[in-house]
Length: 138
Image (spheres, rainbow, N blue to C red):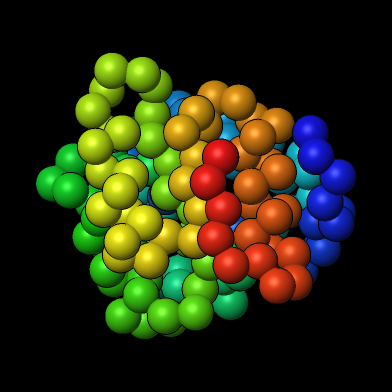
């Protein structure tokens, strides 16, 4: 892992993924690194968290039913345009790679092509939270 500032106990990450198993694995990984992690399984839950819970960064799977990844970026940007968003594609061959350029054009701050690389994922979260961070591709 790269050397970024440690997670602040007040840092809130919203993890959006329709699939409960990878969502829980990533939640545990981020929590072990000191982040406060809230989860959502769809864009409606995500929007509610963004409105109510002082989220610092949104980490989301781009490949969810009913184009929820794209819809979530649009919903988050409508509520809080400045909020950091990390778009994740899934495993190779699942089709999510096609959504990554669209995610970037809609305002994703960072792109993570392999969320199973938990070290890279944690580094991406820390990097987008670093002062002066504009955009990042992992």
